[in-house]
Length: 268
Image (cartoon, rainbow, N blue to C red; front, side, top):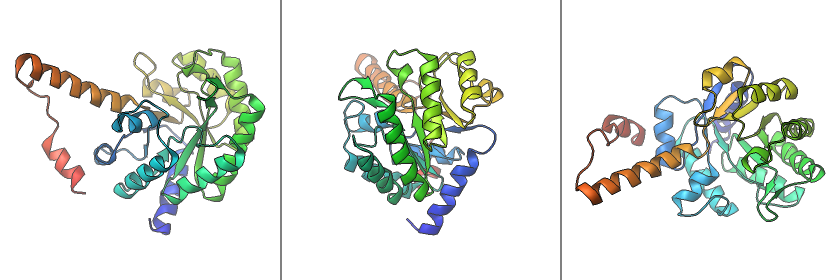
């Protein structure tokens, strides 16, 4: 990707975090990325679970090289900034974390994330270890003008300790992460406590039954993402349509996407 263009995209992604609230949807392949850009979204983010699903795998079963190739394809296909769900950055040591962040930058990422859940141990990293990893990622990201998001995974794994979540997010902020994220929070009052405590741009995962984008914007949430929701909805639509064909031999009216939008997105 042309360096000047990439720098403009990174500057734009940083600007989006400076004021207001924006929605960061998560495409799972090039086609969905182009569709979301055609609909007018200002930036996009990959989804680890959604991408894994395109390969017929569960989340966190994609290799580093596979993710790098995926990022290259999507970054080249769209004209808006791309954030990358980079899991644990595919390394256990800080040097490996930094190498992954640099590799993502080289493939066209405007932002990336690092999380504190370790699937190998099925647990959250000790805070000291997590902070060292975030610090390494932050240093590498800053060198490439990439926006780093540090994630606390407590609430996706049944650890509903808001005080610990806030303590971790503040420590990640102090280690150099400019954007923070605790996916799984659904109570608006809890989210507001986090916003007030961290005093930094906060990403919130939009969840069924949770606060709306307008409600999140009203309390100062800077970024709202969709995680793997679009991928799961797409897979659900495939299942529903296929079951109708199997059972009734027909397709429901209105089940097909807008052909004009597809043409617009796929010929861009």
